Length: 499
Image (cartoon, rainbow, N blue to C red; front, side, top):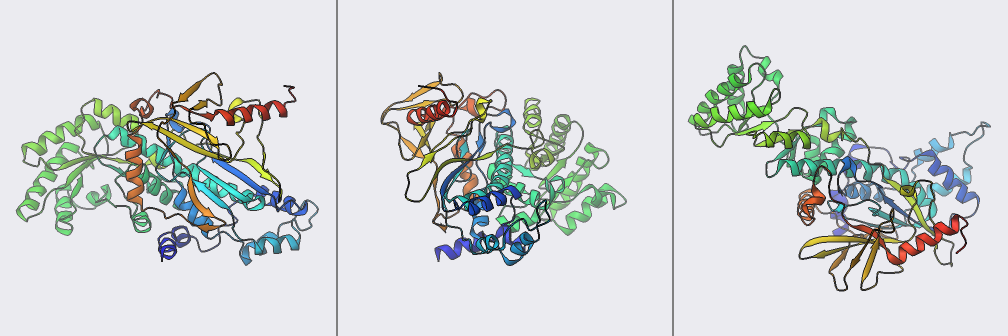
């Protein structure tokens, strides 16, 4: 019953796409898989870690998001007949088939058997920390790279943007209005999910509401007002049609006149045992107009009628409007949220960190670079988060085969002189949890509302300086000392430095 309930709640991707998504990968993943098979090394085990190098938006944190979609994708992983037919049609430079028929037969029989560990959705995360770790046959791990990056990169980006907007908005609701400006159908649905996880209270996207159980909000557009002979008539007709959903868009013509028309219809609603829920401002000087609108509403006795503001908002504009004393009760945020307008990619990567042949121990490996930030970290990585009096004080990235000592020293991977000692006995929790074991799902995905609560509550456990929108304080994240020493040794070895 447990597994059936999970499968029922997670068939979201496959409600949208009728074909297999296994080919949602770059061709070079399949050419490498073919190379492993041809060289008879496909039975090797590998460990890959997915992480990002810098928090987005010049911020101090990110919000992990994408695990639910990743699980959905992995549950259906496997090459279908039409996938194999397509791959058989690909040709190399010599016009001969790119892949041997026997390799395609191998792919057709391939079943997902990996172990997967991940940081649950909604948890704040930092640079260099693995969001998801895949361990299993190297061919499977390799083929999964592109799809997992596609899922985690975008969703983590949008959830982080939403969390920043949530912070700027304070206790006022944030409504995600971005569907029409999102990058395609899947982009809009994924953004609605991630924005809700990151802190939005509702979405205008009805399909997202159906698929994900997210609250939906919305009333009418300018076209409704323009379709009638007058704004007042438009408001009256809408009130008659939907007296339980009256939030009027008041800026089609003159905004403050629109507020007065909304008040007039609000009196009719009150006389008929309904109420004027709110008005929306979508243009002009939102600070001035919201203050003047609030005066008009309060003077008319509509003190509980809310004012929703929209119009290309983001965390910085909302912060500015709050400083100006804007009388806004709720924020409608669209384009700049769902497109991550000021940083359209997070730059997450997926790196091989360990490999072994059958019957042999793990061989740890790393990627070198002339840029220190691009040198990868070896190991079967886990993240240990320490806390004191309910506040998080530092994260240690460590190798599971060499757990931290009682007194843990963490070392900045980009500056070995930056170190922090975590006292013995400091409480902690390990962030990556089991998701799949030998290809079998062992994790129950929480509903969206629970993930959203986790994100909001967990973020409050960090010092306010970490959450600051501009010039945030750097949260201590480092390699546990033994992992740092292993990484340093491998770097020196790879560069031919004698020790």
